[in-house]
Length: 346
Image 1 (cartoon, helix red, strand yellow):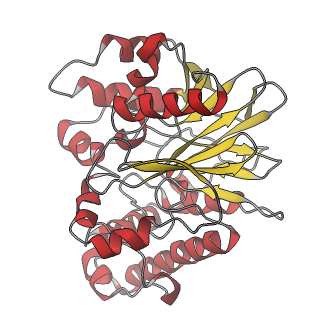
Image 2 (cartoon, one colour):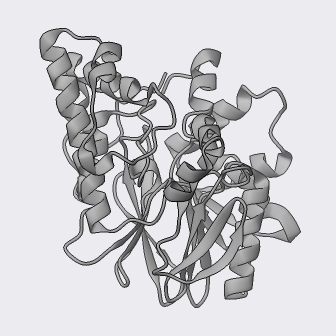
């Protein structure tokens, strides 16, 4: 994996967060994007997010980063008899510490485990927050994710906090060849490796009740960011999340989703692909194709954080199409995911 140069780092470090400020300038839009649907109890709420109960011992943190950037992304809490797991470490250590405090309030335990879905700063920048109050949380992440986080840290103006270094160095590495099962005592959690949004993504999945923390493989009521994406693999990963049973999906950004919302999201991904293939056939640039692009009617009220998001998405598809099968000819693993080897993030 090649190291990121400074320009690439700056572009990626803001990958999912930089344009959230647009929502603050449009309060009506923000309310629609982040509104709860009223179907689940809200057990805690702050300016930066709310915690919704999604099952017995299961809670989703839905970030509402309008004026406060403590969290920025979604996350969650999973309670077992002998351990508690949380999802993500958020944009700031205060976000991780707040979720840990909520976990202790709801379960009686500071989190034992924190799973990071990928390296982007809005999901992984707050790791050291889990070390507050003498917390002994163990970080779980893939090795590519850890190396990308380290690459980000090495390019910051100030060195990372010692607790951050300690937690990352001592992290439990998730196998990228197949699911890892975390036994929390009477409750098993599957951590499933994918890629597509970045070179290394994971989901956190439960069977009963069926709940999936999707990371940024899934966005709801928001157009996804393709800045690091390999689009065909992104679509394949999302299709692998489709279940035959009723499932609650916690997206990386936006409100909680169900099967219907996931279908709308997949239709958007497919429509972007179709637009990119038309552009490729006609020799149209990504910028020109994006200027003409009209998304599906079902997403007409979705948020687009930046006017360039569709250009970036179509551009990602055009690069993949022009490179042929270089990113598509790898075999699918036994768990339905594709192995990581060969993807270069630069």
